[in-house]
Length: 133
Image (cartoon, helix red, strand yellow):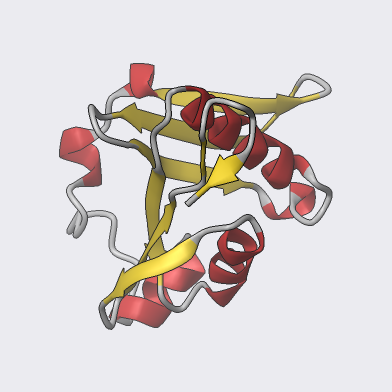
């Protein structure tokens, strides 16, 4: 995320904790993504009454573009669909690869600021296994 933070805010400064990361970080809410025994990323999901929120889906660069992120995301979407809930997330606007990734997986832009793009995937089942929006 460092490169995207530098593009967005001009510097990488964890000491300033611009996003409140250190104060709000809860280790139990984060899952380490492992592939063949190697830690390659992190996933953090927040279950809300009305929706599922993907707070983090990060993979180390060496494991991107291999289908791992897609498989993880499809799993989150399937679980949300079973609960009849939309999935929400946001990413930094400068991270165009992430934006394209989410759009390929059925997310649409719900709103946008100069720093962030907010997405929603509100495809749910009608109970017969058919998708409805």
